[in-house]
Image 1 (cartoon, rainbow, N blue to C red):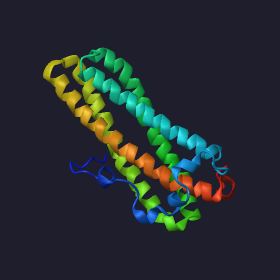
Image 2: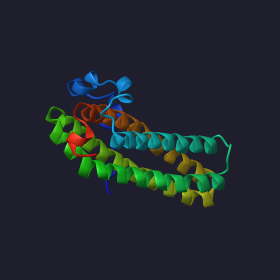
Image 3: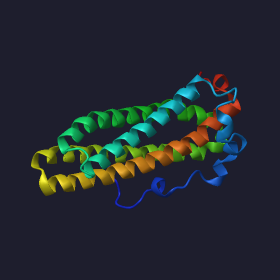
Image 4: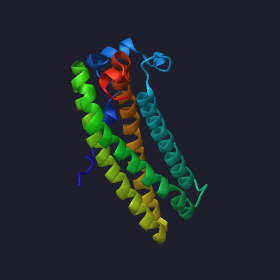
Length: 197
């Protein structure tokens, strides 16, 4: 199993795509996406999945905050949180596998000027996968500490909160950069020309 470094990854410190990878986002800024004729069903579904991950990340973060601020007790929190976390982690991992094995190769071949961008996104997926594993381990530690209570529960809660914040921060950066790279390719070439419709 891969472990997360104690040092911030490039994904944690990045503030967007490098300038040389903004070729198409400059031509197709976010403001034109929704009305563009080439924003097909695949792209719309893909953006909806990303929005769903953003929403669920917010729900999980809010639930942690509620528990830490004593607005919910540990058992109630675990009952709400654990099934949603499992769903979130599983769906995110599956989503990344589809991108890695199907969509990224298509986009890389279609727009070779952005090949380095897809290498960055592939690397992000590796970093996020490690963060998913660390998140799941911290969540399991929290679940086990519920029975112990006291300092063990507080320590496990602190540990989980840190892992969650790290994962969500990286995920939000990755989703935005991924959209800024891929959606303009789709708008420029169309889903049918790319063979993804």
